[in-house]
Length: 447
Image 1 (cartoon, rainbow, N blue to C red):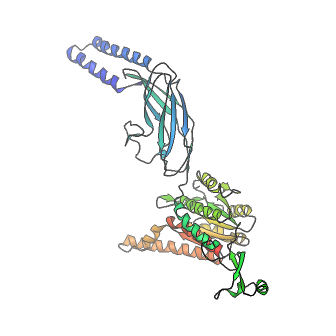
Image 2 (image 1 turned 180 degrees about the vertical axis):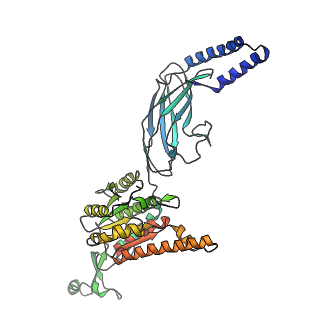
Image 3 (image 1 turned 90 degrees about the vertical axis):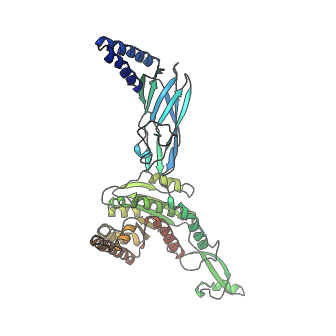
């Protein structure tokens, strides 16, 4: 039950004449008694809320930053019209900050609360109300409860009750780097020989024979084929297919650091999605593993058609864990997931202490059988700090930034000396840089 502002206003207005003309308890009781009787009648005539039937339909998944629509169907089985308000409560992260206001507005009212709706359901009928969600975080979003307030014809008193109507909307990674995919696929077609001359060199698959052209590498001459024909024949090659690419995402404490407006983990996931899409188009088999002290997500054995859908679903609920990553467990799990020779792409931070104490002593287990590529998100703010000279604080900041950059370069050089390919780029550049590194390895026949 709920008393409305109209009832309170009528009580105040009715009490004023009594207080001014003839103050007495009799006059107060007469006014308030009449108002109480009107409220009781109003409450009795209001449509019951406990008997309402509610159901949901609509979107079950949405990319971060896009809008999802969830429809709530309200059925009024009573003989009284249902007039009032409805609040469809979702977590605060279901809308951008500042969307909700103190007032009550419709879902489509600018500046109104999108979770509130005005109710007008005739007896025995149903109405649909659409709540538009625009989540600001990845993961599953579930509603709390639906609260319905039913007013009587006088608007003095209201029935109120809550219903739980289960639903879930999974918020997927946004995949901003998708815009780079067409240019990377064009480069892949060049390597594949569709838009340019086929590459030649060791470590690639034999494709066909063609006539020798001055400038060709003499090591590509096929002497047996030359002996069978009157012209010199050379072998052409194409990048190997059906290789194994395993993406390993470090979800430990270093992935929680924010670079710009997002954690390192989100930038790493975006780069992993672009590389997975590119590798699957290249005919390679792609696997995915998220790990800190245990396996947080795994995708393996999927075809190119459903790979991206499986990856974004697996990444949707991933959050950085504020624990130190178990490097030995990560390496053991990655090697077990890649029994054949593979390209292992490790997306982690190039922080000196965790790598020197954890990963570097275990590199031989990875590089002995596999090709290792380490990708890390660099903070562009550090480069800006390194240029500061305007004040004492700026000079100290520049010295600190220069030391941090030197440590990252030192760690990267240590990895390169072990035969590891290192990609260290800003969040917006990491995905295309990682794709370029993959294409370079493929062109060189190192996969």
